Image (tube, rainbow, N blue to C red; front, side):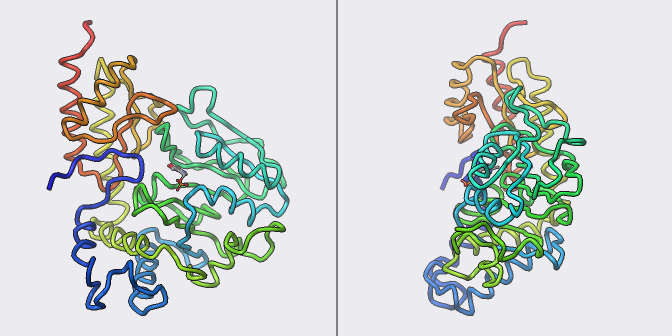
Length: 363
Ligand SMILES: Cc1ncc(COP(=O)(O)O)c(C=O)c1O
């Protein structure tokens, strides 16, 4: 069996320990004689799985009692619609556009009401996070929306925007559980799990209870109402059961690693190896303003598209997979989520050093 170093932006690398455990339990989950894939979501065994997953997530993120945890489907993209449908009481919301995912959420919200772009970093290809200390947020905005870690461009908010008392809604798909967060600062914090937490098919929504109401926009489908899912404990219909089971295993793995503070320390150490190299390299360059660099997604370029392609090809041959940048940006991107071992980044940097020696520009 040969496992590669997988730098995919998502679906992405998962802890090997978790995959092995799932493999061991594939045919007979703890004496039930069946796989979790085959069991009723109303069974005792699955009830334990989902309850433990929620309890472990609450412990990891220190989620207060006045927040609900929902395990939903439809990916992060479904939340782009669900959020305005459930929260736009005044039909107005402020969006900070720091990349493609924020932009997609912004455009979707425009279908339902007056979504206002209050800041953007489009002027420099989303390579920085704008100053969000004093934004022109409309008084009657129902919420302020951000994408906290921009998967494609590799930027991350280091301080949250000043929402001027408005509810903050944050897409954390690509930085989920990568460091501690103060949940009380958010109205909704949500993410698709397929990057840092589990297999595609599950989106986790952590929502303050007072935002869960029956007062939703007319025509909101039953399946897109937070209240329906909250009242049913995420079991209104058949949930993505196997995905939730794997997420639960990842939560336990994270607890074993020492929790989110330990993950942050490890992620900082890991990212520093790559960023330090990019800063000293004469061939490779990081594309993001230094103070806004993500710990999870690291885009870089050589400045020569042919050389970029050669690098991606040779890296693949050497066992470093999925280093090609997003199709809209080009260049390279290394996604180094929680489950990427430090050794993977060290080896990548070694490979980049060697590539530079063989292809470097003369001074
Ligand atoms: C930050 C962010 N938000 C949203 C999405 C969309 O997620 P999904 O494919 O689950 O709808 C992605 C996907 O890559 C993402 O990186």
